[in-house]
Length: 389
Image (tube, rainbow, N blue to C red):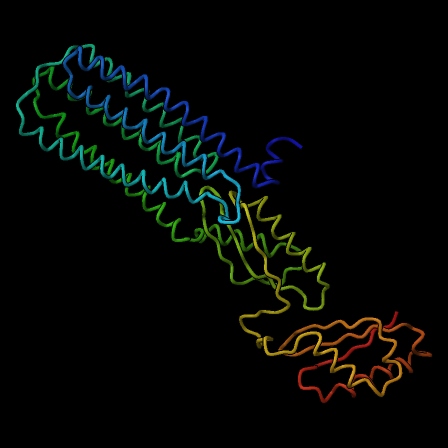
């Protein structure tokens, strides 16, 4: 079995792979960001570009963000335990919400800074090398954005997706810096400040979108309608499934958890019902993207519309009643198995006897009639059938 197939079969392996990919992606972004930040600050100071220096410190703040992402990715990949039976993936969700809030605050700070700069006097013109540095920073940030976005799509990580968009906002900020440098060199005084306000609003919008997605996940928002339609079609395609109801989904981290009720023939065995439920679980895990766990409840009838069976007596009480009803039937002592089916608000009984209990088909029919008449006064027993082997 190849690695990809193993990831599909074992959700735990898939979660470990997500953490490995996240750690590697964040490691790359942190390394590049550190080099870019130090270069921005050094060249900004030497070339008299306050914007480039500010961009360098902004890049350093991104390292703190990446550290947060790395820690969150590590803890969210932990296996389920007694205190966290559904795993730790929500740590990633919470970190995404925090990162979204951070981007909103950063955008607000940049907008305020841009507004204040409009009223300031012109800064000394920067050196041409600062413009070259700003262009390199733009390219580096854009490459990081594309790289992280590609990884986030592959492993379905909102946290990496948020980080990717953060780098895209950095690329736009670097464009603002470059425009400001060009404007300063050309004598246009406030061009960089006006552009900075526009980019700041974009950063705030992106942060709000990321935070909103995380908030929806934290309150267990289900899958979209088209995904639910596909999921229903897959479930109904499984042999033995008559219908389904109470289909519920929720996201946690980068995976989807599902629970549902399926209706099967009420007369099938427990093992066959379990096999049908396993077929449903396997189909959803293997054919629905990001589905990691499925809980299937087996119903012999639609428990949303049929009469409830919680008033019916348990098995031991039913068996005691049946033995009392059958006390005058000699063959009752040879019953090998009682099968009870709780259907339509009543109990359907199947009695299993050996062929030696009767002398022929007519005798078998008469014996079944005796068992049925004996139990017909019981208010909870709807039907009695006799099976011979």
